[in-house]
Image (cartoon, rainbow, N blue to C red; front, side, top):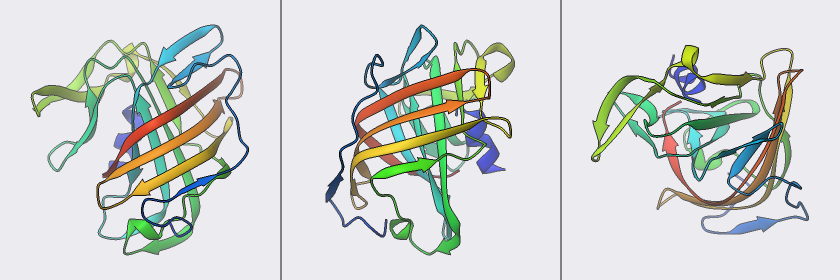
Length: 203
């Protein structure tokens, strides 16, 4: 249920604490960092998060979410985004069917990975449901019927390329440089992000 909720909102064994890995991946031509393009239209996504299961047991998967507003998790409301956000994307990667007692055991490395078919983007978001106040800001769940969306589903595909990543689990912060692309089989989205994101548990 929580996994479906984070999908609707827009949405490491190989890493040591605070270390960075790099390879020779580069930026996507024509797409500004911290945004995604659909055709000739560009959508800003300056904020982000690395998402894990709620716990205490963690499946061997993770997701990156990017949007042009803040993202937060509360026990009462799950993962929601700031209602000023008009664009959001969530990219799920599943490594295996294994489970772990610590999310730090999930492998998140540099390289290119296929995203799962529940990855999606919402853009031109105009309305939010189930709004609530948190930290002085209003958060909620985007209303899908009044938003535009691109869903991978069974007819599409997508990839995520992590050029570099440094995860500080103690501080709940990640520094990441990545590029991504998804398609529903007809429309294609390309994007990239380079900056700091928070770690959230709750999908």
